[in-house]
Image 1 (cartoon, rainbow, N blue to C red):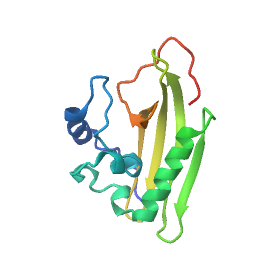
Image 2: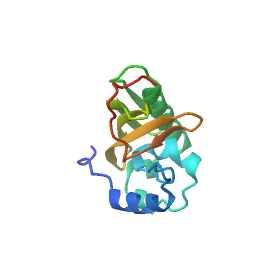
Image 3: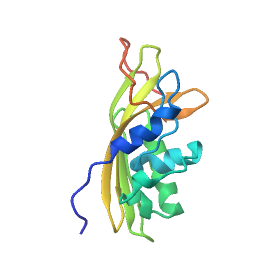
Length: 155
């Protein structure tokens, strides 16, 4: 039986992300435990110490690939409340991703609030983050994204 869910350590994440924040406020050099497999290959973050004690640190490559594929499928779904589970019977790891909100920014960029839960034999954790879809760049974390006046578009 897994213990209670622990909140993610955001202060280390925020500190790690600030130097690489672009003019548009996009955090492209950060990784959160719940989204690391989706983002880390793209950004090459060297210091993963803030992930210590999270489920994703015990994931093998197959677990990380399954988690990332699951998150991408949910983000790319046209369903505004998409959700999907994943599991790896070989390791006992599993997780869940769901869209808990969607909006468009004032420039029409589609953003989604994604809640991800990861479980391993050693830990369980969850995180909810805002990701926005940018042409040619895909889904990127953007904690500063705000809804514009237009209704949400579909990606």
